[in-house]
Length: 247
Length: 247
Image 1: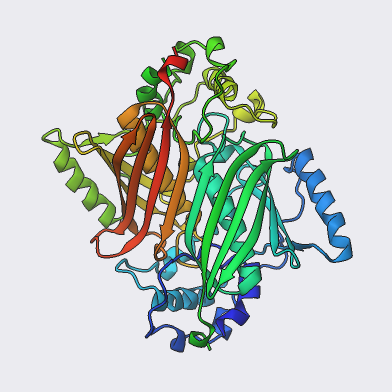
Image 2: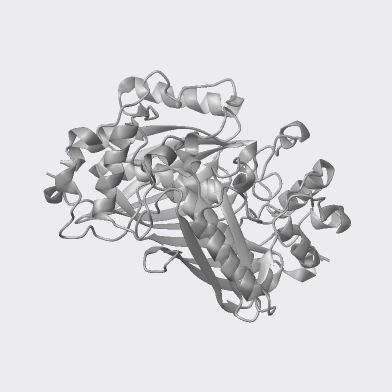
């Protein structure tokens, strides 16, 4: 089942951008053509990008150490992040996804695909999205420590709202996948309270609020390190893919 | 007044990331300290990044030509996009914004600021956000032609949801600013219908639906070039800054 692939896929970051509120078509041509095995993308396990780097600020490092301490009793787990690189298997995945959610646009070809990079991993160390996530299975909670670099600027000196939305999306998406496996985002609703200073660290705290059938409702807030400044709040809706259609 | 600065600021892309649903504090220490003149950032007028490039696909170029034709009778206007580079004036703007929406985080310093780049302009040609916007003043409508490059990948072969959110944010923000000058985003609510294929072109069509006092309600949809595929729909709320507080 696709669900059984989800844990490994999300570790590869592959599911982070999966979008589509529409229910998968009842007669999807995709799933039957792609084996479960082909969806297991090959990762570069030599580089876990969620580990501390010289570009991390003191705040980022301190928070990381605090959460690593929480991991010692097993209540929290750090979520590693590996890139994926197997073009053949990635191409199979594209065909598979398109089978479930077809579009009229031409799909990316293998030559273009060789240039593809995960959005949040595109930037050089310290310039873009620096982040690490931790998960608490009992509380169904994902916390993302996020340091937004100088290449994510919107208004002078502050993060672009799209960069904030990107990390909110990634964090609530991780909560959904950790809870229910393979899911698709249907809605993301963000209230922006105040701008996030460039190069500062924020804490994105997301929580699975409830499930109703295949629907997952996840909320989050974005706060300063000392928790006194609320930058944004968001709610989201995810749809769990029907496991019967993925076997 | 700040409002009078908006037209030039938005042309520089400077306002694109301004966030904050909170009403500016009644007694803001910022406005009195920063002159109107210092908010006029210096742009690099030699490079308008919304003009056609070799990296644009055939679809992108065709749509661009169609809209340029619509511009001939004056009903539509192409919106140029210039970068800004004056660090001194940018720094003044940061202090000004922080005066209205203070945070507990340390603001970016001048050394970090020298590395800052507008999020959507960070990527090399063809790899990231390729876009151009057109505005119809009578209809209060902004259309963005957007080609998402291979460095914006989420799920293999498809755009990251955060990249889609970024361009939605930029487009509805432009509609708000063209209609009412200096504004702040309060809410962005996106329904994701299906994933956007990497390197394809989409049309983001935004519309000012109504105004209620200082509130602006703007909606948009994201469709394929042939308009048959609906990728996303969004609504947004912007707050117009009180001009009395900006004089």
